[in-house]
Image 1 (cartoon, rainbow, N blue to C red):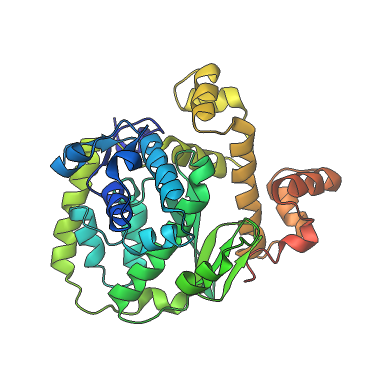
Image 2: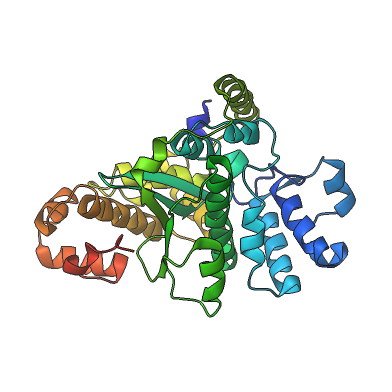
Length: 344
């Protein structure tokens, strides 16, 4: 069975405890948090993590994050965690990232090896004539911990690209939720060009920065590390989560909007099994399909420059009123307002 036909789920134990989880544990310990309190209820033990043999599920990682948030009680915790995440010390995948020759190669490395470098949140890259966009999708049902993971992931990208490029890149960030009370932390760690209440959780910068050469990169070292990281993925047996796989399938089939039964058959499971798996991830089929169709509509508007009528036709809405209602349900906006969704 190929990597493209398998996936990990919220309860799959594959995340090495001495990788990203240890980074969060070290941050908490540096602020005098007791390790027993930090790990309480997670099923994890500090000595096992230090021994390098523990594998966490995303659910356990979310439990660790929840404990850290509560015990640290600081608005900057996610951002400080993010600053330590990438390139990281996660074996060959981190080595491949550290040897990236430019930002485009670094982005492709994280996206391709996301099970190793970003297991909780999936980055995706879009390009138009002026900008490169990196938007983020929940991989495993983060729920209450989603905002923490989003803040950490964007900070990690910004910090990593600045370190490896040797310059401060003009990233602009947009979040789908309202402005939080601790907005100053976003300004400090992500920049003052950070906005809230958008349609996607995304970062963008002029696409000219994608191909600027980065210093100190080794093409040979990167190639060897990439091959070794690929071997790690084959040993895992997957490179993406169930929600990742479902998103791509629903996005690619957005014109037809296949029903639950057809999609369940595509994933070789019963409708009841797919519904149960989605419920385990804190979501349901209609929410996933709405998200995929929303993203296709946004892409057609922003990247392809389609008119309202062309977007409706592409998504097989014959009645303009039905399309307006669907778009309003997906985005909270009318078609005439949605064109501005990536205007930061």
